[in-house]
Amino acid sequence: QVQVVESGGGLVQAGGSLRLSCAASGSIINVYAMGWHRQAAGKQRELVASINSGGRTDYAASVKGRFTISRDNANNKIILQANNLTPEDTAVYYCNADLLGNWGQRNTYWGQGTQVTVSS
Image (tube, rainbow, N blue to C red; front, side, top):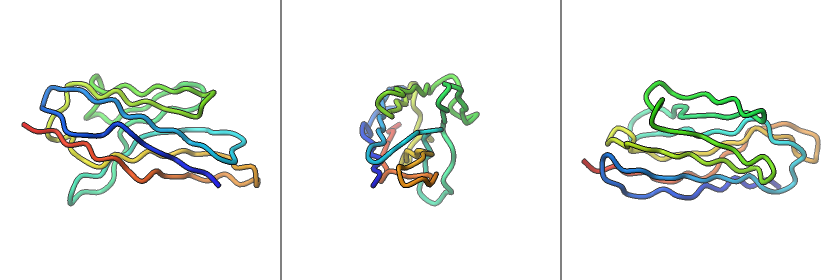
């Protein structure tokens, strides 16, 4: 069994900051890439940021320079530091982990999501 659990969402005013955390746990041999996606009401889910096991990062153009993703490989954990938030960042944020379980299969697992609401 594998669990991916997010925390840290909430309500913030425009220009404010939030810190989202995500941890993968369970019967894991190796975690490859981890990342954050978001889905706003009425829109498709989109990539926000990702980071591989070597620390290489990738960001959506809309968040570059404002969001920073970091990783703790020892604990299979990632952090998304989101600064200078705007109402357009309002969405449910989902964490995902691309990992190899101890049953020998590699799959992508998703968390339940955490709501981020930015008021103007």
